[in-house]
Image (tube, rainbow, N blue to C red; front, side, top):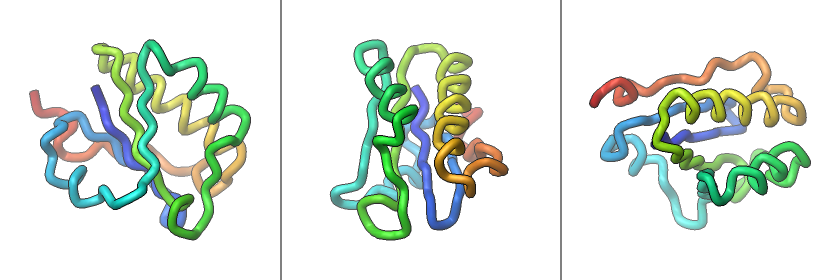
Length: 109
């Protein structure tokens, strides 16, 4: 499983593999968007990203989100995060030229 933090006002995406990483807890806030993508939700969530149903804007409630991607296959999870990055970039140009950052916890295990 990976968790990824998506921030719009300061465009970046940070992927975390170690779920006990302290930075995950630091970035969580009340009422934050938290999207779970797994076998049961993948088609609906990809459709939402494709149709711009997840809006990003520079105000609370729309300026960031957490993604939890769980398929028990790190390669697939990373590829899916890359695809979501492309979908977000179709509507929000600040995301186009960024590189997904792999947090320092990413390769522990």
